[in-house]
Image 1 (cartoon, rainbow, N blue to C red):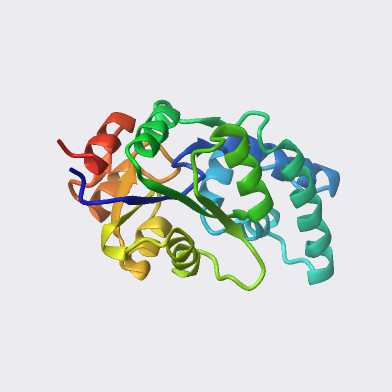
Image 2 (cartoon, rainbow, N blue to C red):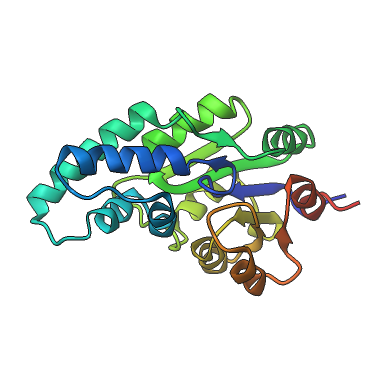
Length: 218
């Protein structure tokens, strides 16, 4: 029997490979406003601290707040309409989630992506599997602050000692620590495998099967 009954997942780089749609949306806005386009490697290095910070890093040049607000609004609109064009679940993830759900686990997603996109993606790719999904919203600090995790635990009625956090980055590692949760990091996401292995020795999942074994030990 597992020592856990609740799993809180990060979204980008953990459940879904969202990088191409994020890159396309960023570059659509950069092209529209005459800024240089960004490579996939650059976009990968920019993600992890929310889409506002992603867009700030992509623009790079200092711009007035009013100009950036226009750029960011254009990104939000375009990404919300195109967030599931090239995005796809990582191999084995839908099956893992169904297995956890069938075993009675409470499941949540907490993400620094905007709340509307989070809910759209969860409904599109994982309908009926998550009890709560939380994205960037007004008045709630972004990860690695623990606030979104705390909201999820309260919504689920879950005990902290029986909850585990699953993510793919140093931000996720810090989030779990700040929230007082056990952590598993996945090797397939946007973080570097070598760096992540230093954060959680023995708690790095190389694939969905390994992740299942860490959550559901024999």
